[in-house]
Amino acid sequence: MSKSILKFFIVTLYIQTACSQENMPPILGQEKNYSYEVIVDDISVPWGMAFINSDEFLVTEQSGILYHVQNRVKNEIKGLPDVYFRGQGGLLDIALHPNFDTNKTIFFTQGVNTENDNKGGNTSLYSGVIDGFKLTNVKLLYKATPNTKTSQHWGSRIVFDREGHIYFGIGDRGERDINPQDITRDAGKIYRLNLDGTIPIDNPFVGLKNVKDAIFSFGHRNPQGMTVHPKTGQIWEHEHGPRGGDEINIIKGGLNYGWPKITYGKDYLTYVGSNPLEKTTSLPGMEQPFYYWVPSIAPSGMAFCTSDVYGDWKDDLFVGSLKFEYLERLVIEEDKVVKREKILDGIGRVRNVVEGPDGYLYLGIEGTGIVKVLPAK
Amino acid sequence: MKPFFLFYLTFCFIGILNLNAQKNKSESIKNGIKLYRDFCYRCHGFNGEGQTDLIPPLKSSDYLLNNIDLSIAGLKYGLKGKIFVNGKLYDSYMAYQGLDNDEIADIMNYILNEWGNSSEEFVTPERVSKVEKSIIK
Image 1 (spheres, each protein chain N blue to C red):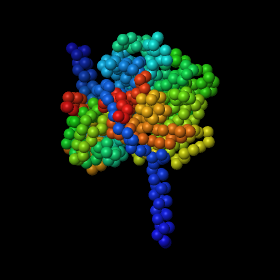
Image 2 (image 1 turned 120 degrees about the vertical axis):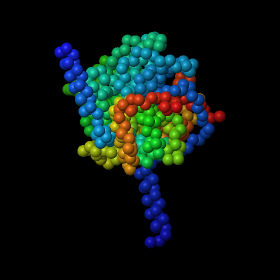
Image 3 (image 1 turned 60 degrees about the vertical axis):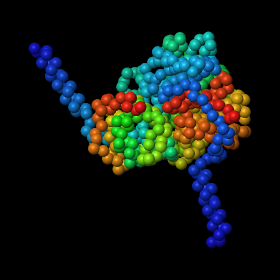
Image 4 (image 1 turned 90 degrees about the horizontal axis):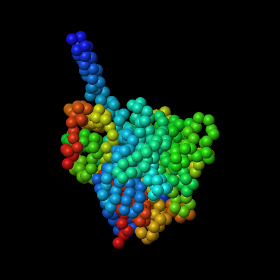
């Protein structure tokens, strides 16, 4: 065999291996010298965050503490329902009612056991009214069943559309073979409710027998990022894959996002069930992700940059990586991710990403607290 | 006298039940495997090998084997800041998981006696209950 043919084979093999290991475009190192400032410290897992104004916001700590922060001083808000904190569950996301200025109402998701059955917990959506450092008028709007003690896949993020609906996600609760593809069961779903907790009459599965008619879309694994696209108003979601196959999806009513029938991920080596993942990445009737990550970055939190604070970051998407401990910048052109960049590599496990009213990006960093991303000098 | 005697008998009976509830080491390890494969393996690995430069190994980990109470505290309260494991510096954050004391004991007994690790010590829920946050720093 001539040298050039051998070279060709080696190069081809290299390209094939590279492609199967990492999807495109490859992530680049940080281009400019960005820095950050710790705004609030000493929060173990700052799961959710909601701005009231540039100097005032609410933060959830996963083990079950709700903080009010004003001018960098944090105070606990008392009055949460009992939080069932276990593994990836606990007190999760928080969001202000679109009319918060007048009604002081918030929404939050948390693990809870309302049945007192000692069988674990599941994700729930609550509303409540902020009265100083007290939470009053707490209402349970949705509670997923059944309870389970598994550590995994509780979700959850909360967003609103422009038509007066609230959306929240719940992960598959570690039961991928029975939950995500079955709309008569909770878990592995994105839900849509009216702001008073009632079911919108035009929800996609309303009228079908025995279904959970709060379900908006299904076939999800573990959604820990959701945001509304600032221009299109569409709901963007991301979810963890198993080993590889984290996904970004644009959520539309009634659609099946495929988990666990289709995925770009692989089973963990510990998998002992009877239905190992097939190497199937597409099937009719199931949505392809907008983007997927191989290897997994373990995404949590997502936000679009809508301001000019950082110069050329405007319109880019930002996603936290728990696993690699950086903020990922995704540049999107013509519905494609054309560039990826690591921001603040090594900052810690990025749990949450939010754009403040001042146009700055704020991150929830595990073991640290809330951090403000500063533009390059 | 009679009610007191009944009370005493009930008390003894509860005592016996509690004794039975206490797991032996192999039962504890067995439950520890289940918990490890739910709560721990995604970061620390199926074979306790750790991950990238951020998550330290548990297999042959001098930190774990020589600092049992500190490791218990990590599971109970979370572990933050710099630690050395087998001469290598790690500075990531491990969140606490909301586990009960007996579950922490089971995980400890498993990771102390798996992948070639071995420890004479048998971690009990009582020992876990006595580990206070103040020992971390």
